Image 1 (tube, rainbow, N blue to C red):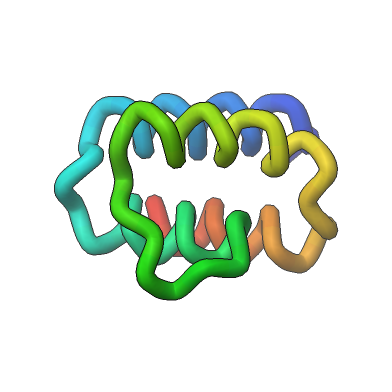
Image 2: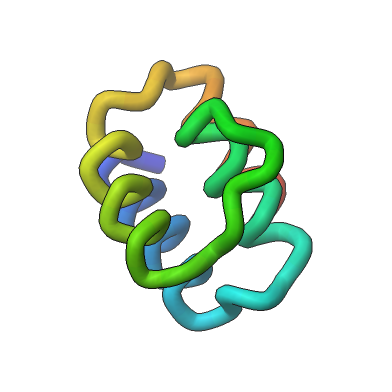
Length: 66
């Protein structure tokens, strides 16, 4: 799967399921903050950082949401 499609699916999942453990794990991994709460502020930061995420992190996040 291409990188842009993975990013799009991850972002859609996080926005749709803010309260899920999977969203918490994905946002925490990308932001590097294990205590990050999933809210509008952290989602904005997440969107800015995920585009520059390492391929390994992106693949792990995609696996978490699937």
